[in-house]
Length: 323
Image (cartoon, rainbow, N blue to C red; front, side, top):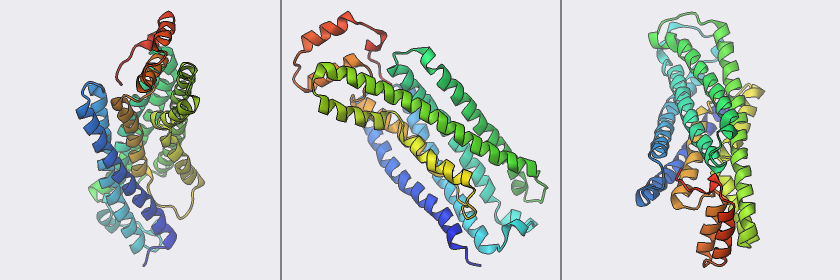
């Protein structure tokens, strides 16, 4: 039986978007690695490892997401009413479906935790290395990724019959718990990735505003601040999480696709943009460095007066350090 159009679209569209995102991500990753190689010492080794790991996770997500989508399309093409079909043949023919789904979500969980580390460190740095500032973001990130880990374990338990290719009764309670954990995780994840980017964005805006008082190029500073906020705060991630949550919480009856591989791409893209700007030396980190860089670009005017002001107001934020 041909797969219903809405069901096919719900599987194919997220898959196509994921592949387009991965293509753009691959280009961005190549540019990032080239810049890091040309400008050695600008990015910490730990962050280089994190960026490479995120791209590896995104690549694996494409592979297992593709397997999952192929299995889903085959499943809904062959079965008239999936809710009524329970047989040994089902487990042997479509065993890769839940296995791929479980692995893809596990990969996303690891990528999400790694991206949180980069964003929290970024927040910690531009807020002047104040530990109390990141205390709550760290706590909510631990809770968030803990929910994802528990959901991964439950998915693995539910996958056991498909691995054994043998009909084993799965507790309905586990299925309900798994869906509840998925939605809870994504909701807390949205909160986490609104809080941290807004903290970063707010600080960048404040630094740019303070620097513009000395630079005297308000229009230029406003443009730079806006670009920095968009690319350095990781704001694109929550912008994708919002419609994803809307789809999952609405329980749209024809939606059978998996958004997790797509989210894995965004999880990697957002921190990579930050690292690219840091490696290029154009990231906004503190007032002193921002003013000094802008004056260097614009001929060094008023440098003496500005540096005197900053020397009189020395703070821990004045220290420059690579991400």
